[in-house]
Length: 357
Image (cartoon, rainbow, N blue to C red):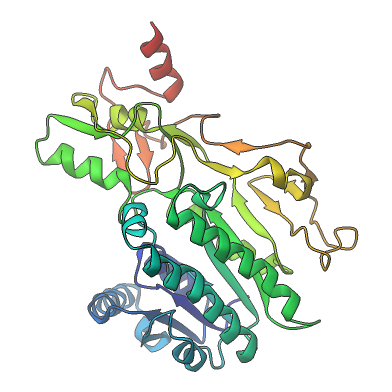
């Protein structure tokens, strides 16, 4: 699918962009991979990293990579960057919840105005497909980040009405928290534990979160690039955890102190809301929410073997709580693997039993 094609990644120097670029270079033979981002230093670091990876693999990755300085707020620059591009993966966003709460207008400019610029540039440049990365915080949002991503998702879905019969296809991939990414609680806890902290801060002892690894996220984006016909929201079937249980698994010898919920935080997250159950279909490893729009006729849409969920179905983070383990029996979350100690819990259910005993 991506062989001899040009792929552009907005926000391409981030955790996802680095991992997705490596996946594409190792599994396909693209014509070009364009990294579109604002930070020249991060581009410099990323280029040198892939030069080194290419030398190790005996492949000239650098000849496939292009680095464009640009902001998704700048539609003119987007139009220039999208020339002759086949696929766009839109990963750029202001996504730190407290930062968006404190800088709401900047969040709107990047997450909403930026989405409109991506859509216009893609339509006018005849891009084949655009996949926009989203978040569980866009479901029933209570913060600026979630609110702007909800609007962004709606824009990308509605953009399919502008494409005609054979124009650009737009779809959305909805994530939970990406394990091990910058800003994730996992490296935060890990750094505290390694630095000699005596306790880990927990905003609220009841809080639960969905998690997804970068590899799982990449696979879902590739599926959207392969299968999307316009307006779908792809959602991985991913586990969730209590933040307290994650802290116990990562640092069983450390105490935990509740520091208070931050501005814009929710106790629990939702991936599939009840209102979307009418057009949600279940597959082996993911869900797809099909657009509830007059231009989308599910009776003639290729549902690829999906089974419609029951009316009223929801996917929320306080159910199916678990922590993953690898083949060695270690608790493994993202890039962090932890040797089990004799009193470290094997699962969140075990922790739950302890807390109630």
